[in-house]
Image (cartoon, rainbow, N blue to C red; front, side):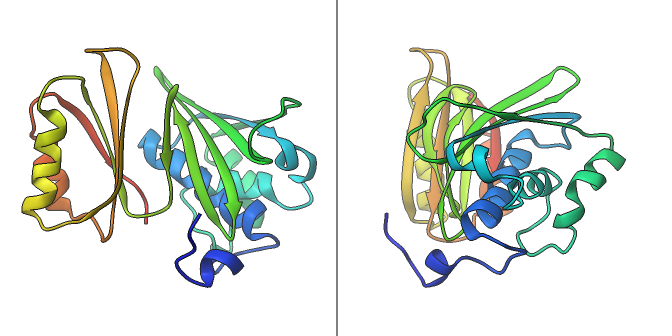
Length: 219
C-alpha cells in the first residue's frame, strides 16, 4: 500500500500502546458503529491471528469496544471502555478464533439490536490504518479515507447517476467498487473521495431512484 504521510507509519494521536493493535482497532470498531447507525445492544467480537493472541495485553479489546462506543483514537475513556459499555447496556462477547486469515490482525464484528444485525470483517494493517474487507457477506475494500457506502438495487443506471452527482459537485473519486450478491439483487457501492463528502451531496444521493441507503463514514 502507499503511505501518504509519516502518520500512516507511526500512527495517529492515540491512547496506546500500539498503533495497529489499539488505534487501528478503535477505527475498525468505529466504522462498524457507523455502519450500524446506532448503539448496538450486543456485540460479538471474533479475534484472529495476532489479535487473538495479544488482545488483552495490547488493549485491543478495550479499543474495539471504544470504537463501538464512537470514541476516537485519542479518547481518554478508552481504558474504561468495557465498563462504559456495560453501563450503557451493551453486551460484549470476545471469541478467540484459531482459523488462519490472510492478515494476522483480523477481527469479525457481529452487532445486534432488536431486529437489526450487521457483520463486518476488518484488518489493521499498521500505523492505525485499517481496511474493511467484508460487510454482510459483501466482499470489498474500504479504508479510512473520506468515504460513503451506497446500498442500492442492482438496476441499470444507478452507478452512472451516483458518479454524475460527484462530478456535478466537483468531488474527485479516488477509489470505487461495487459488489452484489446476485444479478438484480441488492448491491453495495463503496466510494472513497479525495476530500470531505458534504451533507448536500449525501442528500442528493439519497433522492436517487433505487438507492436504499447512503452511509457516510467517520473521518
